[in-house]
Amino acid sequence: MSGSKKNLFADANAMALVRRLMVEQAASQWPRYLYAFTFMLMTAGATAYGAYLIRDVINSAYVDHNLQGIIFYGFVTAVIFMVKAISSYLGSVQTARIGNRIIAENQRRMFRRIIRQNLGFFAERHSSDFLARVTTGANAASQVLNLIFSALGRDLFLLIGLIAVMFWQDPIMSLFSFVVVPPAFVILRKMIRRIYSIAKNQFTGGTRILETMQETVQGIRIVKAFTLENVMRERLEADVAALELESNKWARVANRASPVMEALGGFAIAGALIYGGYRVLETGATPGQFFSFLAAFMLAYEPAKRLARLNIDLNTGLVGVRILFDIIDTPPTEPREDGRPPLVLTTARVEFADVHFAYRPNEPVIRGLSFVAEPGKVTALVGPSGGGKSTVLNLIMRFYEIGSGSIAIDGQNISAVARNSLRQQIAYVGQDVFLFHGSIRDNIALGKPGATEAEIIAAAKAAHAHEFITAISTGYDAAVGERGAQLSGGERQRIAIARALIRNAPIILLDEATASLDSESERLVQDAIAHLCQGRTTIVIAHRLHTITHSDRILVIENGAIAEAGRHDDLMRKSGRYAAFYGLQFKQQEPSDVALAPSK
Figure 1 (cartoon, rainbow, N blue to C red):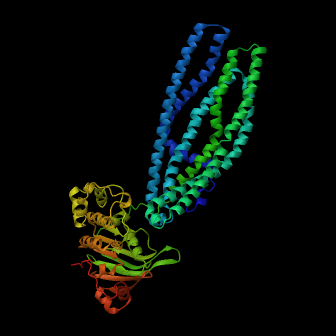
Figure 2: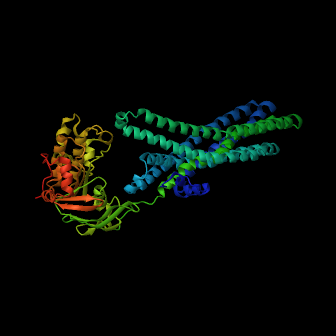
Figure 3: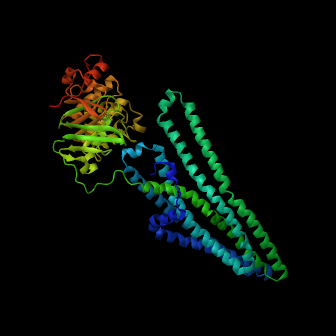
């Protein structure tokens, strides 16, 4: 996916996009399109034959005065309309099914591509941008292909059939009718350039509206707390006004095709009426022939108008097709690693060796970091914000790839093993707990897909969550709400710990897991964490230093490197950076809260 809107809407050959759609998406549907084409052809044939039949109906009534002929042609007309109705219905249903299949496949392809990107990919973009692209891109391919095949199968076949009737009835008058075609296409061609530019702006404006609405809903507490209602309303109104302006431009430009065709069509009909009347009155032509030509001409007007607008509608739809291909063509930043060996653990010893890393070039975050997290021990990372503590956990989980050095687990370089096998050996609990839409049971079971009810309850009990869960009327079936909004902070944390416990992973990563909790909730969560960490290699980040005083080893991380290392008592005696942090936070008072239990 392009990093800028300019690249997203870079000029491209429209025909190349259409060819790619045909090859990649339409080709696999050709049996279904053939089926739909058959019914479209039947519809076109029935319509054209109905126009042709008018000649015999008129002549039977007004020239031959043949009542039996009129009755016969009446029944034939009924059959024609029945065939047209059935074939039109079946063709429309089949076309809709093809479109739905293409949309579904594109949604799968786009999601598969997006989910194989690393965290850096998502950090550079707003989430609403993904939603807009997936929705617009998936539908655009179906819309463009439906336009093309409807134009070919419905409008073109119908127009050819009706033109054949016109030429059969009166070749000269038919040629006269086509005099208006060249000026019509010249005028429509000029509109296309404006349509494409406006369609791009419409997509951008729609994305901005979605972004503002999403941020308002997700940040409603901040909006209310800081009385930002007017600010967000003004922002949305500005976005809506901009989109409305672009939409009005599109309406003016796109709909110019109709009056152009109406006006030119009026001149053609007037000429046909005058010439046809002259033929009937002065040359002895039959009225049936004249009315059959006129009926065919009038019926040909709508498909001709749709074909004239085809280029306009295609250029509007191709904006979305470009979005689709921009996503699909984005190389995965987390490619599949099926050929790499899985991570095989024995003791779960984690070792950093002279690791360097930067999120952006020439802005190092980790500078030559080396340490060992011993098996079954608790290793705590402390230090000022921005020092690189959370980055350490990100690198262990390979959310990002290191610049140089190595990270090894049980002597295996994690960059040489399959990424999924690495993450399956890790249980992660962060400060900002994310719960998925669904029930409490569903969220706990995500730690181990296919977990039994007994395993879910056991994990909840170990995380001190069973008590509050059973106090809810619906128990484990209780909905957590969006991002866990129906639970308190401590309850969300305990659900997250239960999710980590049921995973039964040998490596535990904790990132400020109690930073935002009150004392009572923190005590319960710390008890749950102590249970989670027993016998496992644990790396914990903490700002509340009393929670890690009993850790097996404490590393003070500053500017991406280790400033100090040791146990709590040793570091306090050194009166260095750790002691300064501790004294600043607690004013030399020993805490009484529950801390992480030492390993045994």
